Image (cartoon, rainbow, N blue to C red; front, side):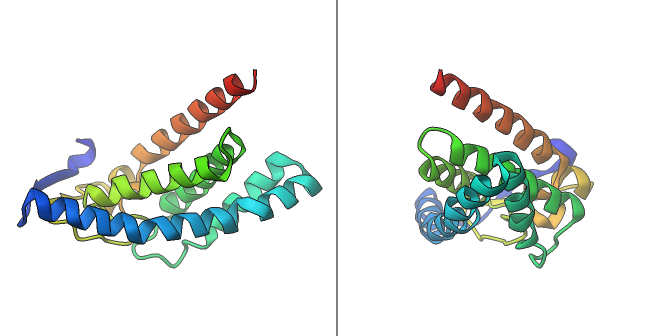
Length: 173
């Protein structure tokens, strides 16, 4: 794995794992929906109407990243990746399905990272059965901020954004 990030066995059963992941998704879902409403939703539509879609996406992505500045173990690359995720989610917002596509992408990412027992934007989730160790260097793996703080996620977000732009373009044709 990149930079020595790895998973080790932890206490708990598969049932414990499934139950905790479901509880965690229950916590993450309202937060992801709220962030989509606040950072995409009406504010993005209004800014896009006034200044154009691309400037609105950029502004809202920086605001989205700024709201994560006080998260534990935050880094410059982590905030950069959060801004890039804001662009990805805004592109998803403008794709077929609108806010629900953005919400699904947001929740899917956060839930997958949490289910892997890794921190989500610096916020740890304790998941039984597996234990995530970030390895190093932090610029590659994200360190204690979680995968979002590392170069591997920079690449993943970039590829994801390109994929959704391509998908949305085909859906319109």
